[in-house]
Amino acid sequence: MKTLLPLVCVARLALAQTTDAEASTLLETPVINAVDEYGGLSATLTEPHCFGDVCLPAGAKVSATVVGKTVTLTRANSPAAFSALGARFAANSEFSVSNGQVAEGRLAAVLNIDGFQVTGPVVLRMGTKPELMEGTLKRPATFHGWSVPAGFTVTQRVPGEWAAEATPDAAPSAVMVRLKKEAGEPSRARAVREAELWRDFELVEPLRVGALTFAPGGWSFILMPDGQRLYSGTLAARIEAGALKVGGGVFVYWCERDGLQEAQGPQALDENPGVTARFTLDGFSFSAARVRVFRDGTSVAGHKGETCTAGALTGYELELARPSCECGVAGPGRRPNLKLDAKGRIIGASRTLREEVAAAAAPCQCNALPPGPSHP
Image 1 (cartoon, rainbow, N blue to C red):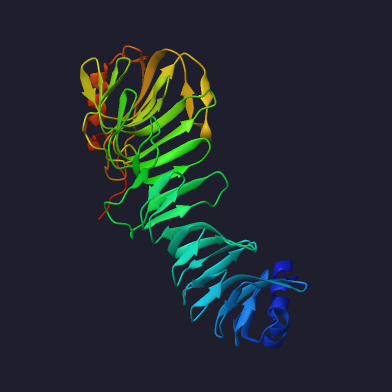
Image 2: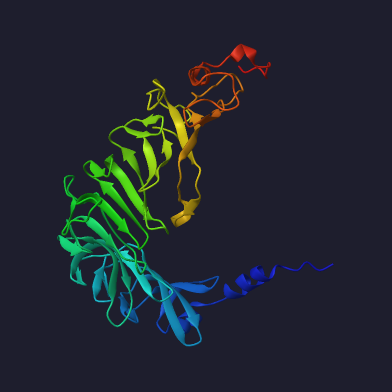
C-alpha cells in the first residue's frame, strides 16, 4: 500500500532542490545559501544589487518572490547601512516590504520627507515619490492642526485616520498643543488618535465637558448616528445619575444628551478590587465592579457597538465587587448581579442593598465547602 505525502510537503520537497546557481538566475544576481521557502526564495548576496529602489551591499540576506521575470523583495537584513527610497537604513536591522507597496525599517540617518524630519523606525508608502506613513519626529512639526514635539511618532497608515503619541524619546513634560481651540475637546494631550467617527486622547490635565470633569489619562468620544457624542473616560469629580451618585476615579460611558450609560469601578477587571466606595444610593456608599443604567427609550448603536439609550432612567444593574476567594480547591467567588429600580430598591430580593453588599464583601466560609483532595 502506497503512502502519499500531502501536496504541501511534496511542493516543499521540490522547492528545496533549488541550487545557488538556480537562485542566482531567478534573482538576477549572484547569491549563496539559497533556500526555497513556501511562496518565496531566501539567499545571501555575494555582490551589491538593487531591487528597484532598494540597493543592498554584498552579504545582505534577502527574501523575495519570483513570478515569471518579476522579482519582488519582501525582506532584507544588511551587514552595512544601505539606501532605499531616498533614505538610509540601518545595518543589522529588519527591512520589509509588504505587497510591493509599503516599506518598513529603521533609519540610519535623519530623513526629510513630506515636511517632517524623522528618525528611528519608519514606514513609507512606496512609489515615484515615497510618502511617510509612520515615523518619529526629530524636530517639532505641525500635524493635523496640532503642534507635535520631537520624540513623538506620527502615523497616517489608513486614509481618513491619523495618530500622534509620545515615545520614550520624547521629553517627559512634552505635550501636543492644538493650534485652534475646539469646543468640548482638549487643547493639550500626550497622544491623539482621530478618525471620522471617533477620537482618542491621552489627557495631561482635567477636562470639563458639560457637567462632567474628566481626569488626566485616556479619554475618547464617538460620534453617534443621531448626532450626539458618547464620551468615555475616568471621572475627576462626582456626578449624579438619578438616585445614583458616582464618585471620582470611576470610568464612565456618558452620552451627550442621554447621560450615564455605564460605570466601571476602579480595578473592575481585577479579581481582588479595592474597597474604596465609589457609588452612593440613598445615603449608602459601596464599591462595585460595574453599574449599568436602564432607560425606557430606544438605543442608538455607534462605532464598534457602543450605544446611547435615550429616555428616562428606570433602574440600575450592579455587579458587586467581591474579593478573591481561595479555599483549598475553591476558585474566586462569583460577583453577584443585582437589579434595582430607579429609586435604588432591589428588584426580586428581600434583602436591602446594604445587606447584599455586606454579603458580597464577607470572607469565604472555607469550612462550608465539601472536602476536597488533600495537598501536602
